[in-house]
Image (cartoon, rainbow, N blue to C red):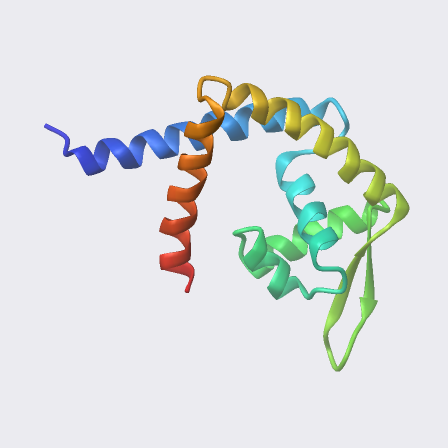
Length: 139
């Protein structure tokens, strides 16, 4: 028999999996993937950030983010510039900004559908609970 905590963990993982699948599928229509769009979003939030900072923001290893950033650079969506010392800074190009905006529109639509079963008050409660869980761990 599964414990209630295991069921809770599985339910969170299942919701995340469904959300990621829906986002990845819908983002393909605008020419990107969830991983790429998430990287563009992180760079937009922290222009000039290093690969290490962006890897942490996108829940990836530094090596995985570096590979992804290389693909985004090859697609002219991201520009890498020398920073202080050996630091490489990441910035969005105008094409990256456009793709990010298109992704935001898609994500808003997909996430509205993903959370449509919950009234506004329940979504606010869920967000508060998840923030409390992650703040405790990330502090």
